[in-house]
Image (cartoon, rainbow, N blue to C red; front, top):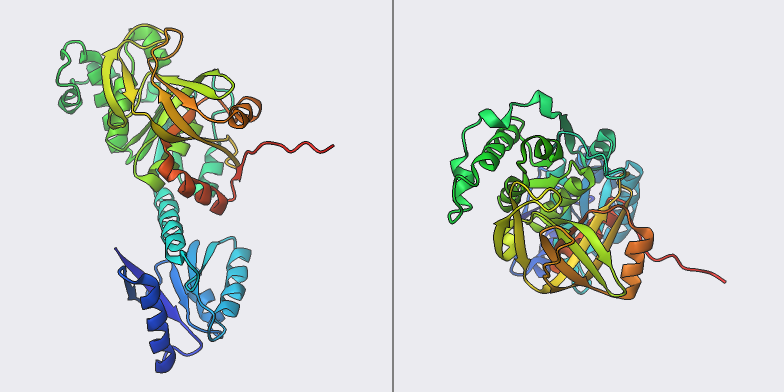
Length: 394
């Protein structure tokens, strides 16, 4: 990747300053490429003091800005002034001191987060059906989502869509399950075809599907179609859960892969049992097709996750709080009292108590722990507060 940097100083024609700046930037980027551009792309190099007015003009149409600075020629002083000005305009600003250890790692993280925030602001999502009536704290108002993340949310009732029963079975869907009898997948393949059309026609990046009304009427489920969409990197949440859908969009934007949405089935001293009837197929080491747990009809994924370290993530319905735990997938059990795909999540007692006493809702998102630092930093930039253990004062 070539990072596009806009250079500003008190005098952009000062060649001595430009030469020194080129040396500082070369030492910072080392083997990574950069290019000086006049058209601002989100990263400003503050070569000297006296550049404040130029910065204000260049950033007027941008909301996520990285300021690169150093210790010479009043660069730092100018950067602090510029950052304060931009923050007063409600812009998201990160300062990177090019001369400290690990500065490039910090720059890469911030750059990736800003790219994720920018990408989310161009996306559309939809609830298909309604938010399930047992999810009493898992919806988010459209205006909150738009103001916080720039995502446009559509609400598409089932009665405004075609009947899936008139659709042809999807050939693409069947390719994901080559060893399963096509007759067994006939109806759920039609559901996939309908949902795929809705995604394409509305240019959607994510859906959350309330399918229990369809399950009760026709004994057909959307579990496999949602698993396939998630495998294709199209966010597909269950039960019309908006919090899970938006949280999954955040994780995908940062990490490039969609997390698994799961119920909390049990909390013990240092373990949590998570379970649900679907998961991205590319997150599983193996799986088989069975029935949906609650209704024992239709089709659903019963899969095995590899053991390893994961994060457990949940945003609230106001987009101002989040919970994030870390631990290990220690087992992939097969209890008969919970949804088909299951993991035992091992962590500290402090974290299980936090989950029990301060949870933001039932569904949580499971993803590789390598992405946890990025999620934490992005939430901080978005001013979404982490739920932590309350300190008791005596």
